[in-house]
Length: 353
Image 1 (tube, rainbow, N blue to C red):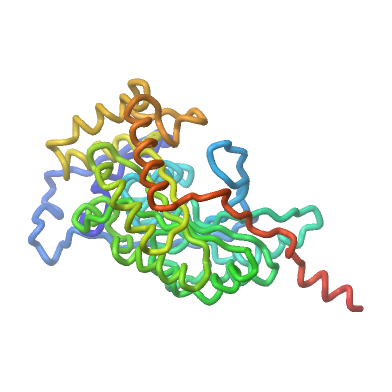
Image 2 (spheres, rainbow, N blue to C red):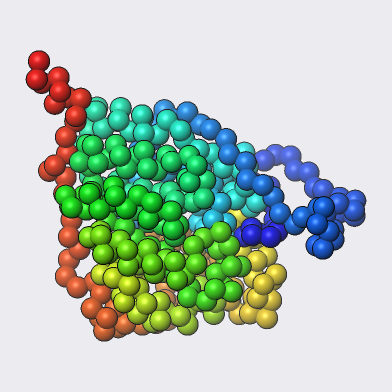
C-alpha cells in the first residue's frame, strides 16, 4: 500500500471468526490503475474517555504515568510495538492500526478533572508514548496542544517522545514549560537513510527534519534527547555512530536506544515486511533477532525486552556507550523535572473568597 507501513491486516488474537477476501476477484490488482489506487484513506473515530492518565509499574521505563491522545498511529512504522494494542478495540494491528484511528476529544477536560482530584500527586507525565502525539491527525484535532495548555496552566511536568515535525507548532508552549523546568523532549531517530525511512516508517518526518526539530527545540531552551528505537540487526544497526553524531551536533544532550521488539501480531507483520522489502536479508535478520531472544522472536521479561541479551546486545551497548562518551552525551545525572510548582488554578481562585 502506497505510504502505508504494511499491506497486511491480520485478524487480531481476540477474534473468534475470520474472513478472507478472494484475491482473484479482480479488485485492486493493477498497481498502475489510477482509478483503483494502491492506498487507503484514514478514518478517525471519537472516544469520550473516562480517564486520561494511564499508569504503569514497569521497571524498564523511567515514568509511571502517561497520556495518549490517540489510539492507532498514522505514522505507519512497521516496527511499532503498540500495534498489538489495536486488537483490544476489535481491530487489526496491521492496516487498521494505521488507517482506523481513535481520537480523544475530551482529553484536556478529563485531564483537568484528574489533576484537580485532592489525592493527585504530581510526577512527570509522558505524552504520546504508546502512539505519537504529533502524528498527522493532530494538525486538525489539536488535542495534544490542548493537553499542553492544561499542563502549563497547572505547572505540571511533562516529557514528550515524537518523530513528528508538528511538534514545532507548539514551540511557544514547550519553551515556556521548559523555562520553569517542566518539560523535556525526545526525538526518535532510527535512520539517516531516506529510502530506508520511506519503507520503514513512511508517514514520519524525514531524518533531516528530525534533526531540525532537535536544533530548534534546543535553541528555544527545551532540553532535548535522541532515542534510537528500535535498533534492528542488519537493517539500521550500522548507522548507530552516525545517528549519535548527527543528534549531538543538532543539540541533543542525552541519548538512548531500544532493541527491536516483536510482540504478538507484530512478529508476522515485521517478517512480511522483511520479505517484501529486504528479502535477501530477511533470514539473516530473523536469525539474529532469535539469538537476542533465546531462540524466540520476542521475550516479554522485564530487564530483557528492551535490549535483548547475548553477545550482539552487548556489542550494541558497548558501541553506543563509547560513541556517546566521545560526543559528550549523557554526562552526569539527568536533571529532574520540577514538581514543586504544581498548582490547581480553580482551587487557588476559590481561596480568594
